[in-house]
Amino acid sequence: MNRVIFAGGGTAGHIEPALSVAREWKMTHADSEIIFLGTEAGLETRLVPDAGFNLSLITKVRISRSLSPSLLSIPFTFIRSVSQCIRLVRKADLVVGFGGYVSGPAYFAAALTGTPFVIHEANARPGIANRIGAYLTRFTAITHPIENGSLASSLMSGLPLREDVISAYRASQSDWSTARKAAKSALGFSDTEPLIFIFGGSQGSSAINSVISDSRESLTSQGIQILHGVGARNEVPASQGSYRAVNYISDMATAYLAADLVISRSGAVTCAEVNTLGKYALFIPLPIGNGEQELNARDLVAQSRAEVISQKSFTSEWLVSHIHVLLQRSAQAPVAGSSVDIEAAPKIVALMEHALLGGK
Image 1: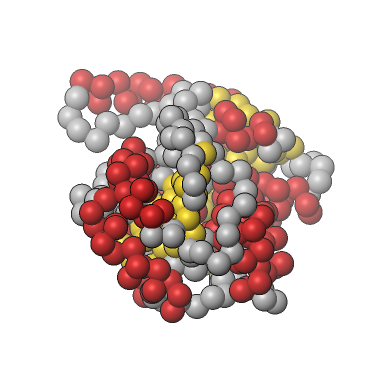
Image 2: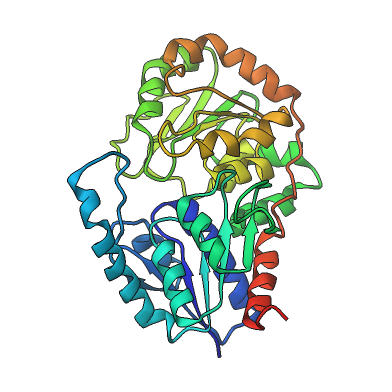
């Protein structure tokens, strides 16, 4: 029996791929013990137990993006977090990390205990934890090509998808047009009128929500239907007519299939899901971070499956004046989804098996 530790916490962009790979691993290694690492502030406290996996919490190493007194405490917090990870990792056979606050201490703990570890990088521009961790292991995988740095020679695996997205792709590939109409009907929308699916990530985006609040009456008056995921932490506006608002959308696969246009952030998971099931997307990259969200959308833009606009430029006036152009471009985009990420989880599982054997 192997004990495998998964380090992927904080946001859904780290957690969902980790859960996908954990499920795939369990299919062929049913007797393995799987433990997820997380912090008390991350979404993993809900998503991991809901998926049926055990979760161990460690201290979060928060790195401020600006100069502040809190920077002085980082070395001490990091050492504490690594120490907590060592107690778990020394009993493990393998560690698998997906970036973020949890992964950095896990990588160092694995290196210090001589435990093999695998890294998966979802974004087109790697985060600091994975960039540093990749110097300490040979077993790395990426979603997008990376030309320079420690991850440049990684396995091109793609992004591990949720099972509902994979199932929806396989069920739809014989007749995408019929599948899209059926998805609209399943959600309770007309299958003859355009549907916009809007969301700002699992926690929502106040900037995107504000624009939709100011433009929804104008959009619906033009016969446009709207499904709006406002995020778990935001108040749900009243649904009215062809506008429907919810906190959280559990059936994302059906929402993607039904949408004539997706409006969202361009996180790595969202881009992969749009590519697999989506038709056309307008992406508003998160204006903080290291610019990875704009790069994540690059391939879809090149395929004429998406366009990108800055948060500053995304206003209700802009959306109302451009909505018909966006829907026209959507109608001209390929109707079929893409299989490029369908086998990502099995590829990473194969890399994990390779790491367990010492790379032999």
